[in-house]
Image (cartoon, rainbow, N blue to C red; front, side, top):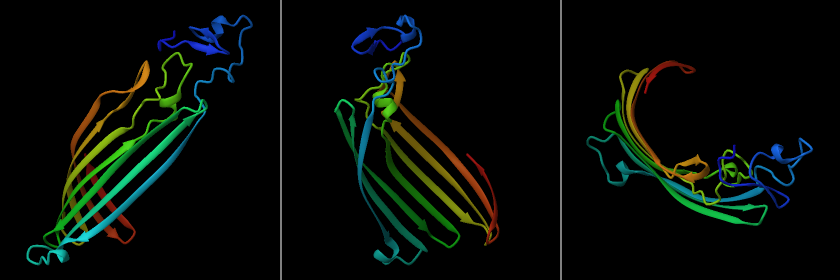
Length: 211
């Protein structure tokens, strides 16, 4: 059955259900008039930059600081969709990333990471049509994702090291299909990841990991 609430149209004639029920000659090729996906094109423009600052040298730190550095990046994305009917859909997003690495000794080190990202809707999510299961939505916006991580690591010996990471992920404007594609709901995830690594030689290593 058609659960979308949108009728199927073939050459301007409306068919409220599956087409094979209404065509008296049986199977009929309607690919030119009733494609399930519009033809579309996407242009993408992106600008990004990144820099790393040695904070130990910048602040002339010596005591209790083996190394201390900050990496910062910024990316701006702009995309423009145009379908076969010359309808235009545009969106843009700016996403920063930061990473702070601190090692008080040669053996002990810490990392703090923060980043934002996005997922643009696919053509399937934007332009699906004449489908009895769901309908695309050209107003669908990108999903937005934010991640944060904190890590502590330790070199037990020259060949054995371990780390423990806490991570938090938050996604908003999730793209879901409920009859019609739409942005609805959000997701949050928290967890820990532990790793122990053994370097055997230059080309071999073994490790165990638990999340």
